[in-house]
Length: 290
Image (cartoon, rainbow, N blue to C red; front, side, top):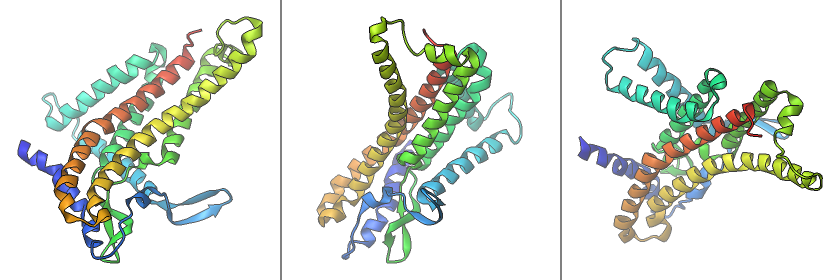
């Protein structure tokens, strides 16, 4: 069983290498283009476009997988003697409750906002895990001219996705802060006691810190997932890029190592960090430190 699990990343990356093999006879392998969010079709509404792109497809997959797994697990009710799947789900719930919800949210806000931060964790984790499974959505590097190639792509490697989730968290934190403390007391709590001469500078610094929250929360997830996927795809396509097959025995094992590291650690860690920071921002808005 353990040996089979070890062969999984090698098999997946072997599938991923099919587009590169198909292009070896003179085509161009351009992995970077896979992370450009191009609409397959859409409707232009001024500065906005409503349409379908690869990022949208992966978001739909993440939503469907999250909902389907939940319904499948609870379809027969929870068992007194849990099977392996229920045990995994209970462990995941316990981890979310203890290390994300209780660790970041005030007791008065736990029941209200724990479902949100837990849903963030599960949704982002699902998106990240699905992103390492090769799917036939590579429209830039097609197989034999017309068949979409296999690719790994993370919706969370799209800045629009991570920024949207971040803005939702920030908006919730400010609304909850005002609701719990009142409009004026909440925004006054941003500024620590300071001499009058330093007050303008402190206000500017606090506003900048709020803006940097948005930047850091969205860019951290985006950059980690984009960088990891690029490393894997570049290793898989390195043989084609330089045109020398003797590099394959070196490049493919390196890609496997990156795949295992990203799938086994980074995907879960980034989901946890995003959900935990979201809980911290909401909790600190409800109960300001000063």
